[in-house]
Every structure is written in structure tokens, then in C-alpha cells.
Image 1 (spheres, rainbow, N blue to C red):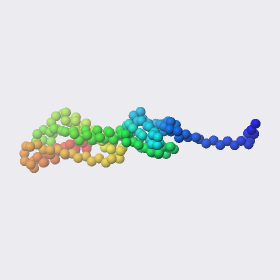
Image 2 (image 1 turned 60 degrees about the horizontal axis):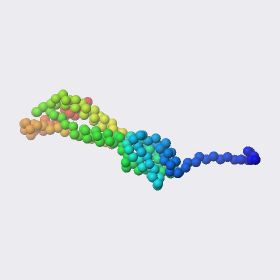
Image 3 (image 1 turned 180 degrees about the vertical axis):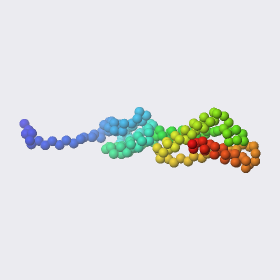
Length: 171
């Protein structure tokens, strides 16, 4: 029988680096959204794919770098939701057109007024999304005159139309 006064106990946590344990531990610590898959390859590299917020991606990348047994991070198949949103907004904004009354800086119909309102909302969202990603945005507004009148009049009309759009979008 052992004398309890002569027994010294020393407990250390044990973290197995076996792939199945490492995969489960990583999954648990990173708590990926349902849209993300995490697979650990034979070399200890985390292959992350799917869609996630930029904040989750940054946190997961930082956390995984500190995990014992993880040797690398591969996110080539991982897409930032905000980056996708930014691209969608940019395309929608770039390709939107407005029709003006010939010879005037007035939109042709009420439909274009609603479209201009939606355009303004998209631009606000674009700037907010770009800020989250730390990406600068530069907005260029151009408008054209119509073929009535001289070249100087056409240029002036285009500038007046661009200023009309700018004033509405800035408000």
C-alpha cells in the first residue's frame, strides 16, 4: 500500500496532435459559420473554404496561427462576404444610367427619381462596406449633354447634369 504523504501528483494538460483531435479542437475554437468548411491536411495546413465575414476571417486566421499542430492557413477558396457585397454594389452603381429631359438637367420620369434614391442608398452602403474592408473608394460622376446645341452648350449641359446628380447623392 502507498503512503499518501509520499506520493507527489503532477497533472499537465495533454493536447493530442492526432489529426482527428486537432481537427475537432480547431473546429471548436474557431466556431466557423455554417457557410465555411475547415479541413486539416496531412501537413497540418488548415484549408478553409466558403463564405464568411471579414471579421471572422481575421479572427480565425490569427487564432489558428497560435494553435499547436497547425502549420499553415490556406484560404484561397474562402470569400469575404463584404468583398462580394462590395463587388456587387460597385457593378450595380457603375452600370446604372439616368435619362434626362432633352436639353435640361431634369430626370425624364418619376421612375428615375426612385432609381436615383436607390443609387444614393447603394453608394452609402458601398462606402460603409469599403470602410469595413479598409479599402478606399473614389466616386466619379459623369453626365453627357445631348446633341442639341453647340459644343460649349453640350459640355455645359453635361456638367450641369453631373452637378444635379452629385447634389442629390451628397444630400
